[in-house]
Image 1 (cartoon, one colour):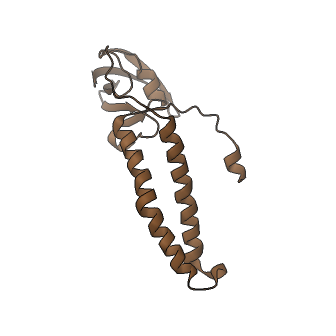
Image 2 (cartoon, one colour):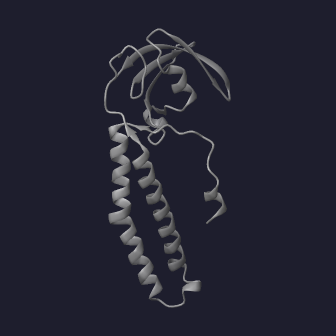
Image 3 (cartoon, rainbow, N blue to C red):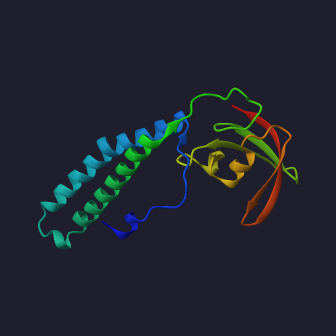
Length: 166
């Protein structure tokens, strides 16, 4: 066992995911198992048939790829088993909860739009922020027109919630 895999992370990661996020992770696992792994296995077998494996770059690289694919598949299997799919809209839609789209405005009038999702599906380019992020933690359970402050490495920023949608 490698040393890095023996240490447990002290970071607590929320077990929540949207139905779309779960589908994406399941599709990735299926792709790795049914498409990618067989392709790499075939390439490794072909490289092994060429002879001396100790100096065979294709064989060495292929084996490394297989280890990475297997590690990712193990992670996805464990993570998918541990996740809780949140597919219900909360009764109180006036407050920010998991899955909400939230629009906020900073003190200079700049508007930002975020969706609060699980840590496995955050995507800054799409405005998806992890429920574990400082911004999401500041937003949770708040309502429209509430003011929030968020600490970041650049300092503290203030925002006003302008809309909440599900």
